[in-house]
Structures are given as C-alpha cells and as structure tokens.
Length: 118
Image 1 (cartoon, rainbow, N blue to C red):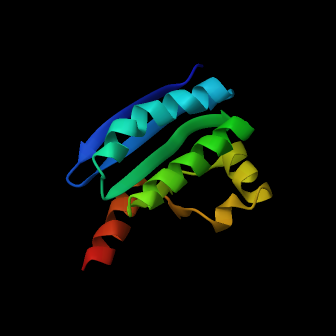
Image 2 (spheres, one colour):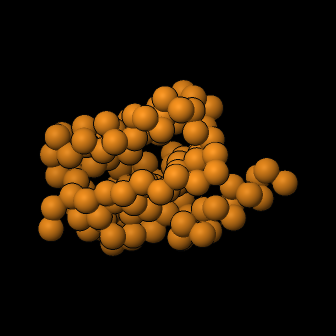
C-alpha cells in the first residue's frame, strides 16, 4: 500500500489522516507540503490520525518532528491519535513518545482540546 492522506478542516483546526507507509524523505516532504497551507493559516490545532498508518522509517519520524516544530512555532497544538503496533514501537524506542501528545482516537483528541478551552 502506498501513502495516502486526507485533510478534514474543523473549526479552528484540522484532522490530518495518514494511511499506508512513510518510507522515504519524499513521503515526508509530500506530507509537509500538504500541511503548509494550514500552517500558513495559523490553525489552532492539528490532530494527526495514524490509525491506518502501518509502517514508518526515520523519514516518518522526521515528518512528525518537522510537523511538531512548525505547529509549535505558530502557537498551535498537535495531537497524534491512533498510535499502535510497529509505529508505536518506533516512537517508544526513539523516545519521541515523551515529546508528543497522544490520544486513543480523533474523538478523544477533540475532547482533550475542548477540555483545555473550558
């Protein structure tokens, strides 16, 4: 399966769903380019849904780090939802699980964001 993604804009933010594999620097760059418009609009939050992401290499980790940096630079919040399997193992081995905010599902991520507003 190749890399697929979709963006669902929400009020104030977006949900970025990724499916398949992130295996190359080109994959990472493609995802960053897809998010660039949202970042320029200074969205308030971004939830990256990786429930259907099967595999990543260091290029995939690079994407998540770049994304976090850009989102934080505009004062926004990033949540990764649906972390599982081999992708979760790689986040744990690389200690990136200590840097990112995670939720079990997109709905949980949205609830977490709404709770912060209250």
